[in-house]
Length: 291
Image (tube, rainbow, N blue to C red):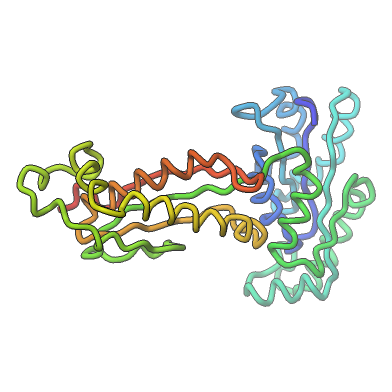
């Protein structure tokens, strides 16, 4: 896709626009949600988005009267010679009703009437948009992960899949992080806290890190752990998981867990990719400085 081309995403409410928008972001697109259509030509004139990313714009009936300007804006793009792809998301009325009922949210056009009345109004309003779409995706029988995979198949050509690993140190005395996917207990390592000259330092210092990894088997353990988790990465990607949080804990979250977190992130970044899947790791330290 050239820098002058833009992806316009529209469709029925409840058909999965948010899921598709997030999937596009994961593929490296710069997504603009609910942009007034009249601003489309100005956006296209800018070329690519921040950091050279391709633009994807979500336009739907939430824009109220602004949405009525969509076809006019697309006509202006054509006249200017700007390239775009119009993607329309659809699903059966029954599927849409079930989705709205499960989330207990009203349809944006139902007013004081039933969900089916709002869906009928929206179909009429979107009829011309659907008829001119370049790509139509029926999400009736797709769950979230299947829809993400479909988006990757259509728009991820030539793009390398990736997973972001957040390696998070913490102290058990402050509680296990609620967003942990995997928890690693570093309390099997002798605690540098009991060495007076190391007590005021953290695992970010070379002195503490060297002490932690001078213990027999620790460096091999970390290497084996990274190798083990890396075998799980393809499965995570297949299940639609793009972010992984590994929580590494010790008593106070200051010495052992911090040193291990730094090394685990370093080793993951050294892998670069696992089976064609890019791996990027970022160390963060929740409880350093908390005591």
